[in-house]
Image 1 (cartoon, one colour):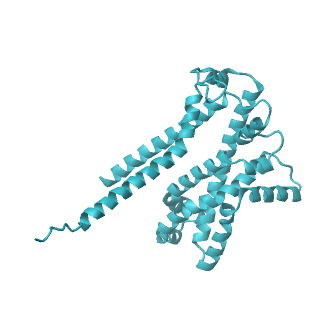
Image 2 (tube, helix red, strand yellow):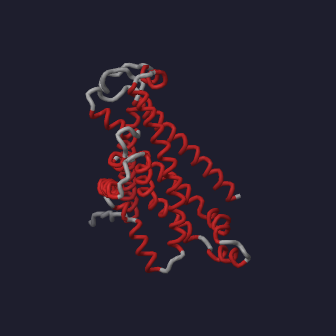
Image 3 (cartoon, one colour):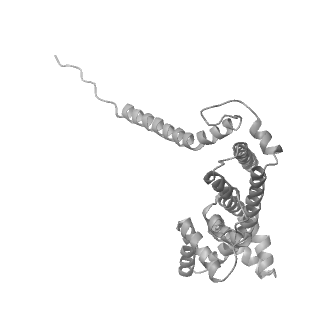
Length: 285
């Protein structure tokens, strides 16, 4: 008698492998999310603790009270550093958005070879190490005999973030029908008027993305700021560095400040995505 031999089903093997792949993919995503957000969530949780360390959790709002009511030099320096960080970020991002957009428009109008050469040159600050960029800017300011100040920090941040704005705007320009711009010129519009009324509305989403990316990079920067600031000017990153390197250590008010910054950014992203989804649904109707 012949024994029944069951042949393996190719279809079932395919679905098994697919299921294993999905599990591995989901596990990888959850691992990355845990590495990104667990440390941040720890800061949020321990901002409500007055314990001496992370191992000694004692629920308290003392850190928030210190942040909003304390008149100590450390807290006042931290608030000033936060204000400096936001102002430098907004101003440098605004200039970088304008310059980056104009640069993207200029590159888009060039022939292929000059465009590729200038695009590669503009990408150097992106791939270059921050420490090299910071040293180059510092030596440049020393060479032209400009004292390090808020102005030099601002120039450094604009130089650092401009290429990112260009990369955000260029794809929008490539999708745009440039014949509309040319038609506006033929109908008597000036190049500047056609730029504002035709090109800017088309590339505006890319400008917003570039501004947001430039602002994020600016407030996050430490190396360029540290090498090009004066001794009396501090941003949040340089303040944290000086406090961590000092004998007194980090202020307890820094934990709730970090938590509030994270929650503010998270709320902004949620609101932006909700509005974006509403507009997408309205466009489909």
